[in-house]
Length: 175
Image (cartoon, rainbow, N blue to C red; front, side, top):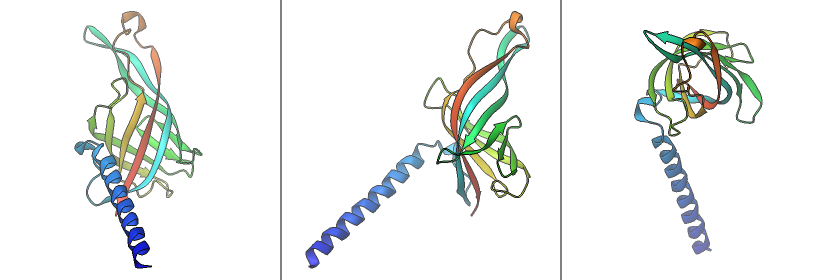
């Protein structure tokens, strides 16, 4: 009887250690400059699907695509509508709570054709819903959304271009 229990315990310990290693490996994939601040914990993760909107602007004698705003729908981890992400940058939950943030760090996406990953500090709150406690946000797992390197010239000055993207937004709050 003791032997089977010992084997079960060993298997459970191995599974637990594997889980810890998997979690550690996942955490290591986020660049150090994008780690959530010490003393904060993950409170919410949503998936965004939408567009990054760019405007063709002159920069001296050069023209380039400049970010105007994101325009994305947010979905919870079950794929149900959660809210929206828009100019500010701002995130609004279906319950009416809203946060506005300011990017404080970035790192290139592992996908070279995608917008960078970000760490955002929340600078303002509205409402008392699910986002009311949030203090920082990570933008990770981006796909697409990057402005074209060319195609913006005097003939297109002032024109907008929408580039589809997806990303995961992770919201953190104090422990």
